[in-house]
Image (tube, rainbow, N blue to C red; front, top):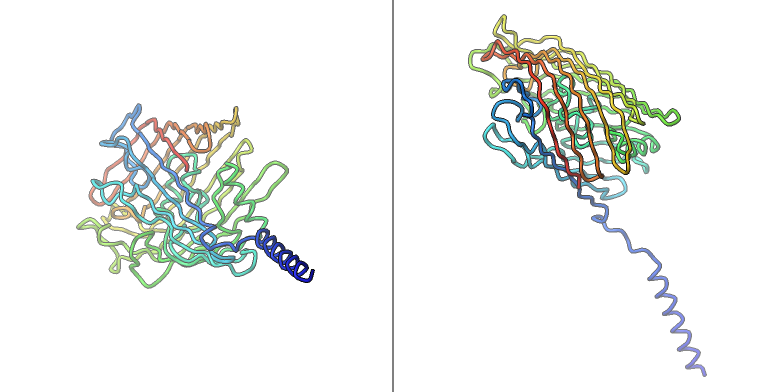
Length: 397
């Protein structure tokens, strides 16, 4: 009898332990939060082209003479919350160009980690190569942008939008959740760069060596506000530093400052009405930067200004999405990252339509009417005007 009672007790304990083992969740491994995603873009820019000499070095290098089918981007994104307060993000691009004759090289675009300072990660530091918080369209992923290329006015501030540095970001948890939903819901959000951002970075742009011992400083203040069904976001931002003209950016004979260093400073305002269904996105910046002056054959500090406005309308149709849009842009000033800090005047209007038959595929057709003056020491008279139809197919995975 005692043996039976003892055996029954042992079996009961084993069953209880087994039940607890089955119901207790297994501890989460650090790699369980990893995410792998990406997108690819293939373009053709030469339908109904009226001027093959019209080109865009800052944007799509396949525009104009000798351009054809072109892989604009091929990105794979690795990211994850490796612990409660540490997040990492790595994004290489496998469609980078090593030169005008060598295409489709792999190159790092983003490689950073976020370190949260509180339990909700409302306060955090971002360390590594990442986007500089200057300009909504600059921070907006190319996966989400409507026009095929970023505007000249603000994108000329930071080539490839990125640099190596340290940034501090703050945003309340509710606002961070809203930022995430603006992207997830297809409203063309810019991502989470905080309500307030402040940081220091090298200043020579991504994947370029530092050429002086003085970092650039950038700051941004932005806040999205939800009014009934509409969401509005207004921002102000600026940066300041010293830009150094690298030797491979200079034509033999062009005059420069003795140390090849120039004040590089801009301030901008942004306004976004998210497309629910009508959308507006507008930005304008002013500043000072290096620019080629053909009157003196020299690179000099000069004033710059310009901006753009994009209007769109989001149509949900039988589980598909159509977004017609129009963008008008203007820019006058130098482009520091181009040869001899090339002098520009850009006036451009684009009319387009984005079609999303499902979340994994997008097709954009865009009619571009452009006038561009782009002059450097070697090519001092270069005013080009022309029109074209541009097409892009994008797959998201």
